[in-house]
Image (tube, rainbow, N blue to C red; front, side):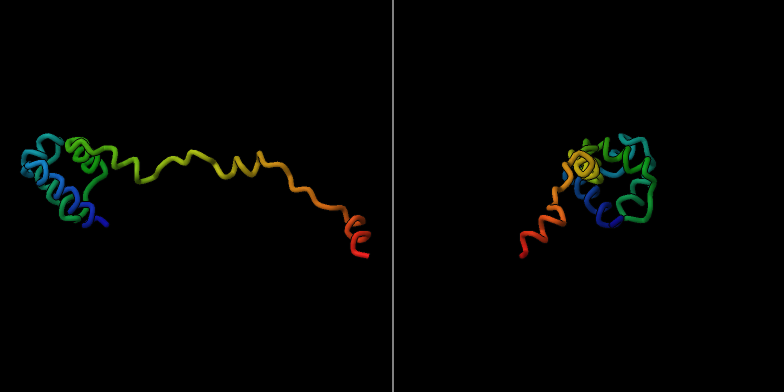
Length: 95
């Protein structure tokens, strides 16, 4: 996953026609940190966030853990209890 993410960032950087030095400067990280991030060789979350901001792609973070619009637990708490036939009604109807 780290390698895949690094390759996507590198592709985006190249698409924007930026070299590593320029992007690193814009992001406020070292060239080595950027190189490690792009190679999938480990990086910090802070470096990733800075690089994403410098590339104008911070919205990517919204796809990592989207906030659900409906809470399934709230649905079960608010739901009406199921109605069941009484035992005597089932016995009368069977005979």
